[in-house]
Length: 355
Image (cartoon, rainbow, N blue to C red; front, side):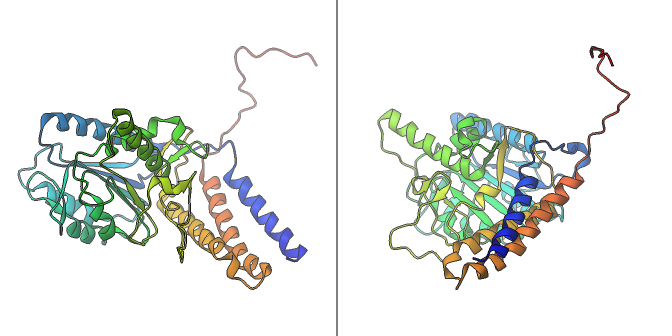
């Protein structure tokens, strides 16, 4: 690689680091900003009272996550609408689009069934099939995370798998039909400091998935029982899904003899922030979409670095993307309210200094 290209890329990367890693940024007041993320919680048919209490706890935790993120919150299944079934309410909500929405979270809490052909999420009234949910989700063009916290949810992954979408299922197939505890542990992951695997002050959906999977396995191990559920995550659209034990840290370990055309699972899920241990930077839906798309383009380019004829060619391709990304972060930084320091206002207990 020529020295010229090396120096230019260093300046771009260094500038991006300064913008992304700025330690002191003042976020705007949440009241003055649009609620760019939407969290839809669906509580299915509970059956026994013990499950009703558990699902209510899971739902309350997700409500806290929505409040912390300043996200728009919709809950289906807590109240009864005499005009519409829960199935109709969910269908109407997923078809509702706003330009301000940067991402939608769909959390399905309850029980599921599988008859060998069709997987269903049990609702009060008509159940929701994996085919129906796939049709509703296809109308959503912005980033979408579908989190299936119920038994026999495995078949939902293949039907829902698509580009720009994160799909998590509590089970690996439809035959794991016993009550699933994965949703319980996932709803608690945002409170666990150890869930922040890369120690960046944020717990992503990927980190929450890995933590919940670990805690689910520990639950069965403590009871001395074989695990009856094995969660999967798919966010690269290959319809396969990845287990938590296929990750080393936050990196998906390639399977032996496998040929990977695109990105491995995990990258898009890491763009969904579950919770933060530091002040959240509120950005517009347009800025978030632009940032996420550029990050994915850069990662895809890095994935096929070896296919370029020379390093110069590779850096010629990646430099414009890095510059665009730095501009996005620069605009985010400029949009923040600036702290104004008044030289005439000093602390009341300030010590006098002699000239």
